[in-house]
Length: 161
Image (tube, rainbow, N blue to C red; front, side, top):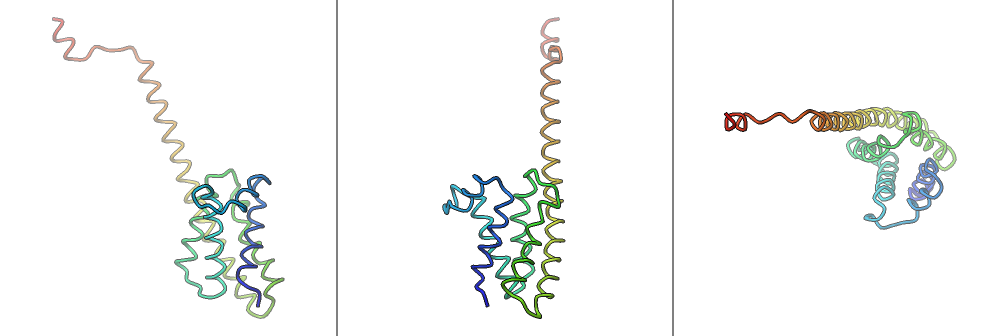
């Protein structure tokens, strides 16, 4: 049985190919979590997903790992299909590295992971759009306040009489 590490590295490599080449090199090469939080998060989440999928199947850990990745993918300019396609690439890796009768079971689990990831992506994409809309409303409000002619305050009018 191939090691989890080989599967993790191959899957992570495929995920990193969705980024521009120089970004992918940095994400893969910089081990410091403070200088490379995205790369660190991706690596940790992928390791967790592989471990849980192949050994334990703890849905809470799988969901948490997916959530950490989908929070990132939601703020990037990916279409929803492109944001979750990396999950399906695990099927190809497992077909080569882990052929056998239990592969169908793993593929069904990967499909379930993809559905969860899609829901999470949409949740965080919606939050991102709400935050952008709130920021735009705030800017319009500030601009309107600046453009309105200054009205004397009530206490200033009373004192002038």
